[in-house]
Each structure stands twice: as C-alpha cells, then as structure tokens.
Length: 412
Image 1 (cartoon, helix red, strand yellow):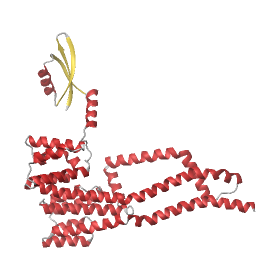
Image 2 (cartoon, rainbow, N blue to C red; image 1 turned 60 degrees about the vertical axis):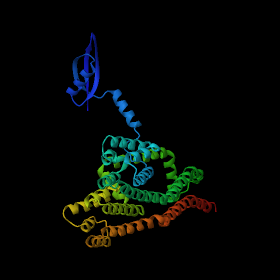
Image 3 (spheres, one colour; image 1 turned 30 degrees about the horizontal axis):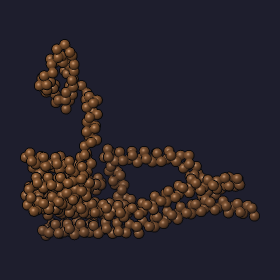
Image 4 (cartoon, rainbow, N blue to C red; image 1 turned 90 degrees about the vertical axis):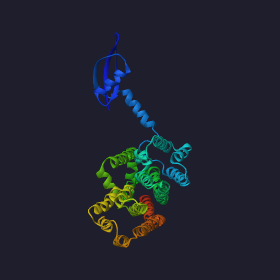
C-alpha cells in the first residue's frame, strides 16, 4: 500500500489529508467519497509518523505475533478438540468451547479468528493456514489431511501424539543438561571470586620478597589483573558477541548452516541433537505415511520440523531422489546420515509392503540411542567435570603454595 497527500479547499479554508491506497486513482476515489471539499493537488508521500507509531503499537500489542505458540497449551487444546469432535460435536461449536476458557492470549486470538473464518464460509485448513508460522507446518498439514479425509478427530489425535513426543524429548534433554550446566556455572563463579578476592591478598607478600615467581603464580596474577581491570569490558564483549552471533544466526544462512553443523561436532551434545532430530523426522514421516499422506508431501512435512539446518538439508535429498525416480531406501542412503543397517531395513519394508512397521523399528533405534545419551549424560560428562575441577584446584595450589615454599627455603 502507498500513501498520498491530498491538498483540498473547503470554502475559503485550505487543508490537507493523507490517505492509504493502492494507487493515485483509488486515493482520489476515497477522497471524493469523504466529501471534504475540492481537490487541489495529490502527490505520493511517505508513511505519516503517527501512522508508523500506531502500526508499531498495534504490532507490540498483537497477542499472536510471529513466534510459535506455547506447545503444551497447544497440545492440550488440540487434544480437547479431538475428544469433542470424536464425540460428534460440530467443529464451530468445538472451536467456540476450546477458545472460551483458553488463558493463552495468542492461542485464544488465533482460534477465535479461525472460528470467525469458518463461520463466514471458509474451510478449517484455509482458516489455519495464515497461522502456519505460529502453529507449525505439521499442525496445518495434519488439519489439511483431516479435512480432506473427513477424519479431523483422528488427525488431531495423531497430531497431539507427535507434538507430545517432540515436547517430551526436549524436556528430557533440558533436564539432563541442567546438572552439568549448574556445575560449570558454579565453577566459573568460584574461580572468578578466588581470583579477584583471594589472590590479591597474597600479591603484596609475593612482591615484597622480590623473588622470581613461578609460572602458575604469574598466570594467576595476570588473570587477577585482567579480571579486575578489564572484567566489565570482557563481560560486555561477551554479551555483545552473543547478541551478534544470535542475530547472524537468524539473518545469515551461511552462519546458520555453520553453527548448526558445528553443534553436531560437540561432545555428547552433537550426538544427542542428531539422534533427537533423526528420530523425530522418521517418527513424523511414519505417522504421516500411515495416515495416508503422499510420500513426497510426508517427507517435506517431516523435514520441516527439523530445527538443525544442516540435517534438514541432508534429509531433503530423500524427496529429491524420489522425484528423480529413485526408491525411498536410495534416498535415505544418499543423505549419508543413516547407517547401512537402517537403509537395509527401509529397503526390506519398501519391497515387502511393511514400510510403516519398519519405520517404527527405525524410530525405536534412534529413540533408544537418544534416551541412552540423555539418561547417562551425567556419567558421560563426569570425567570432563572432574578434570576441570582438578585443573582448577591444581592451578590455585601451585600458584599460591609454590612461592610460599620458596619463601620458606629462602628463610632457612
């Protein structure tokens, strides 16, 4: 849309107004309908400052926004819808009831709009399509499947199972990493406190002896000086770097790809991420195929829920291979993500007519691997934490006690 400034005259008084229109002719038609007076001049102009402020305020107050809705609340809402629809209740009544007592403002606004669109004659899929970014591509696709097959309740039940499985995996991973993160944070705080407040107490004693200080002591004194003098700048730089990386991660495809690939190389985190993404992809793909969605569409939807861009790019090769006339197992092999055993299992399921059952077995393989890492993450990371703690204590001991022993030798 464009903005046009119109100068007009009403009696002897001259005035102007800014109208939003697609073109100059439409702006003139709007002006004549308003019957403000005689048009003198019309020209395109920039958006008024007041309008820009109103748009910004409206965007800020918009409960929907662009971010995804709360997954737990969405699952609960969809589950309630599935139960009500399965009981034979009409869709518009179901939507009215689930939104009536919904506390989440974003979900309430979305499904109230969906209800209004349905009551005005739109289909369920067409009504939720504008909210694909908030609800997720998978949610919209399953609603489309339910509407096309006439089994919305069953599709929503499948959808809630998938979303709950994804949510459980994320919670499980966060819970498993909480303990190591607390330990690392506590170690960092303890090291900083000792370096800033304890080391200076020995500094004057060491300097008064004028003896050659050992290397660990020099390192601790240098670290104390750096933290004391440049500490705020280091902290500000770290925050600025984190913000910059976060911004570039969202805006630059190359940075996004590089960091997602780098994550997969991190000890424990990389494998856990890989197994979580792959098991999620295969699980969603198997459910969609079993539900009757065409294989290519099922692959694209399942690929769309993968958060890691590097893995997603690899998985997209499966759909490309099928479009070229290759088999499903060839597509899986070309990704170079799946081991030979998995490829052979898919090949057996594809040729034997039991693909959905074989995919479920593949899902179990990757879920078991993910669960093993998550359940044993504390045990797997314990050697690293013990090594870090030992290094921390050793550095402090050598830095403080070595010069004290030298002072004792000099006194003797």
